[in-house]
Image (tube, rainbow, N blue to C red):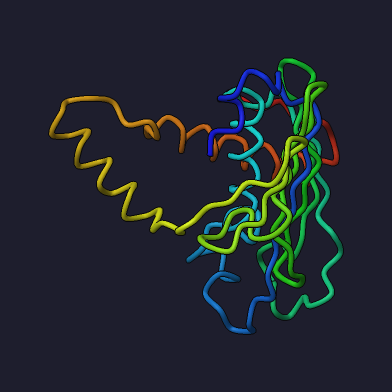
Length: 195
């Protein structure tokens, strides 16, 4: 779903998101050499991407972040266990978010002067979404295999010679946002996002 596509909602100005699950001890996701980072790299990217979509397809201009104190330092020796962050967008929109490997949540909400949308359950998973809006609930039946649809779209882009709606530049943008969040958490300062 493209959050910013319906102009009747207007630009979303206030957003919030959370994504977390309980990571089993010894899982590869807690090894920085294998995973690149912790829950920010693995789960937080979904919130970042959703917020960029809700803000009209633009990247935030700056972020603030704070790594939460580790409750299981032996399980997370070189990646964060949990992190909170705020993204500031060019139009003044804000997104407050958090992610963790020691909790369970999967939610996203975006509000504007003209309405709101809330993914109450399974916001970024592949089935079981519970979505409400200021105009009523949304239903997704039947659930689709998102990866299969994306791979089919990539193949159709190659065959038709058209651009993908998810180009490599979008992935680069998402990693620039994550790098800025990690820097903000390290420094404790508001950090510009350099895309």
